[in-house]
Image 1 (spheres, rainbow, N blue to C red):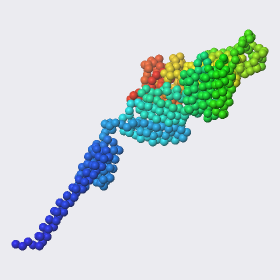
Image 2: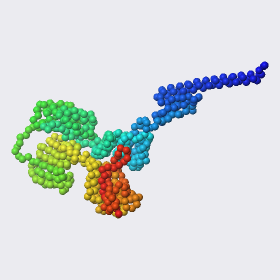
Image 3: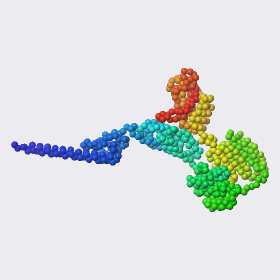
Image 4: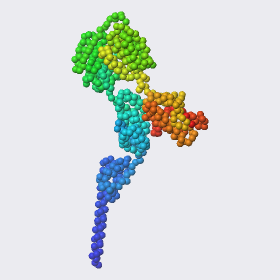
Length: 621
């Protein structure tokens, strides 16, 4: 039986279709295998070994646990470079942030006249709105540039403590860069003067939170010293500087090397300053000190370009001439040398005239000794009154003829030198001059030396023995935060802060109390202090809270009016919270109506708290 032509055609087309299907399946499988292989190799090469690649026809499926969202995105992008991105199916998951190590949270803060800028990474738990509000207050109208990123990881221990300390430091530093993380705070700032730098360094160092390392570098403009002076002495008491000014680190190294060879063993007292008369200042001073060593001691004074060397009495004349000759030839061209070898003088038996000025720790001054005439006596008295106060001067001088011609200048220089001390004695004789005492100024010795060189001349024989006493230093002796609160507590024990009934108006009787507290706070410097207001439980709770807030604000305003630096203070009203006595009795209610002063501190869980509290009672109706 013959097969029809139509049936044959159907068989041919079916066979062709089956062959095409098998070929297509084989081609797809080859494309799938090659795509999977290419993508997997690319991911492994780029370090994404946590990603697995599966094939599903022409689609490439990525599976696995990505350590971060950023790495997930990068793996997808890498796969898209090998096959069409539309063929890549994302089945990747991102690990829980709690299961992986968090990044380092840190902020770089820059403050200048234009405003404040912040850049860095902070934990998501940081109160972003509160941080922005605080930075805005610190900027005080300046521009705030916030480039902070947020990481959804737990905040590390001490993060909030360190951040709050950095912000408190930022409030006091107008030109600064502050780097902060959970372990350390680095402060790099510029101060307007040496005194301000010392004050800021002291205030910052004494408020360092526990568990946070602190690095402070505050620079101040170099002082201008004129005349630019260094004075070095070698005598029976050893080697020492009365004054030392340097212009470069290289000059300091050269001077200290020469001083060490001459027997000086203490810390370098030199001040970096402007006003050096020559770039070769360090070389000239080092040569002069070395010459003093070779002649056996004495005094050398370098004031601008004038070098005055006075050897010890009785030094060998030949050795003196040889050393001075070498120095004269070695000194840089700009410098001029004057050298002197004193000759022992025989006593003539006459009484040596003298003048003595004494300053007691209480500020009382007694002037005794010889004065040439009435005019000079009046000038000395008026000068002393201008320096120490009119009521603090006791005159015990007497008029004497035949005094040296420069006696008046020496006496006035003595009174001025005494004003650099907290207590001490200045003794003036025709050929000697001594200044001895205590001071709270670490630079007093150098300042007195420069004064005497200016007034008496470089060759003058004077002896300075001034001791720096930290307790007398108004900056270094600042009370600790706890001591400040304790002193306020002492005022509270004897007095009360009172308000008019039902109002936030301080009574007239309270003004002296606030004056006393303000005086304490001015001495304490910049401290983070909370002024808290409390009421008793009478009346509505909401009204009590508002009244306590208003009273705390009133105290803060009163302190600000008394020029207390309150930039680091805050006022909070707590209403009838935290009673310290029973509200069932009038005595208890009176005790609960109070104002408290406390230090703002931090605890480990990041919650702000107050410690070292002291309360001052407040009257309410």
